[in-house]
Length: 52
Image (cartoon, rainbow, N blue to C red):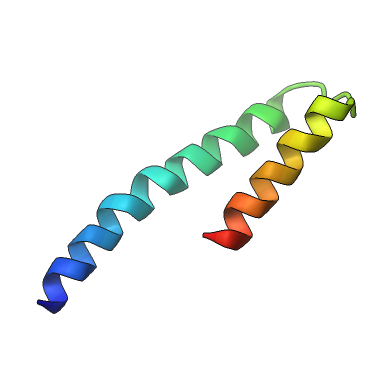
């Protein structure tokens, strides 16, 4: 039963890590303007990382 939870955690964690990396890489490579929408997006990213 333990292997099931290990595999299911990896199935969720790996794509989530790729998604977070792509979001950060997109912001890293672009020219960031701190508009309201960008602040909400950065806040969402922080909540997503800390909440996960």
